[in-house]
Image (cartoon, rainbow, N blue to C red; front, side, top):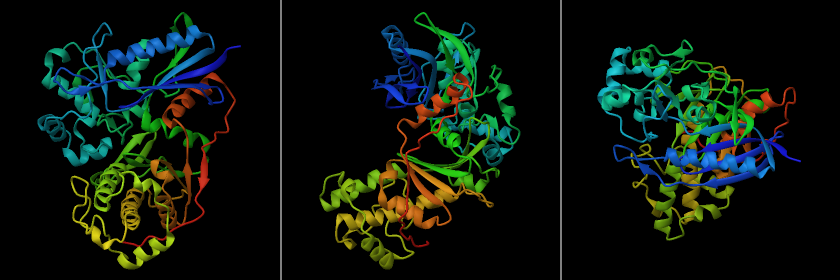
Length: 462
């Protein structure tokens, strides 16, 4: 007997995955691939969209023909800040341009000047000035830098919606993709910003993230979702499983603190501190802050390993020593040892005197104390004046770091801190938003892999 499944294609910058979930959202099949990048028409590295499309098509065909699974629906979770342009015949016009490309300043400066200046524009669109990462500006870039191509543009889709379009033939948008620092959405008025109308291109109104369209794969009728932005997808399981307010701290290369219950308008101070707003599947703002914590950790740990002449991954074997924490607090108190003058542009603190530490383990404890303090400041940015949240969920790599988790718990004494381990959280969110459309009236009891932090460590105020 075939198992009913939801097929999710989770497309990251490095890894691409196919995951099959049953209707209880248990993983029945998972496979990961990597593809080499190609060069776009400017000679800049980008994902190979032709190869990605072929892999998706071949994978679906093989799953259907295997006759082990009954694919009831397909959905896509992908990275954001990436657009695809279609001509009037619905054909691709460009490569999948990389959001790391450089944005000419004259393009964004013109938009800022014509729309009440940078400060008001970034506040209203909840989009810090991020160049090419503000995907709306990519449209203006195409118009100015590649006008012959732009003249042929009929429709524009964000990456998740483009992959959906391949199977639905529907030009759509949805809240999480259009509300992801695109500089296109007016958060004050819940609609496209007025500057977007000047592009003379049809921009689709966002539909519900749970929308499904009919399609056919290898002769089998199925449904396809409209796709979802991966960071926002990772928030979906927590929104689904919680009645009370919470803060989610997703850690990895970036530590992103997300508060879907903070309704306060984004301030200029918050924007200057790397805050922004995502938009949830419920079309509500998710005030968020970012800290490049994983990368800062990586490069400074390398500095420690070079100095103490130990393997680069020695931090993985450092066990929490509360006596060391207490001693360091007494020694440095409210004075940091690392990042005394802030985090440098290259993120490596070459000014710290490592000879003051008796061992690699002691130095690593102090690095984590000082780095955690920056994380605390980042989390505080998304806590509103009238805060009623009582939980902090920590996911990702630093959820396994006892020093970090217990320092966070010791600081936020009014909240219960949990670590949460969900495999493939973005893919799970992409499945969850369409699952209830397929299985009416059967709400799941989701296992978020929670572990309460019952032991805390003190961290000195700076």
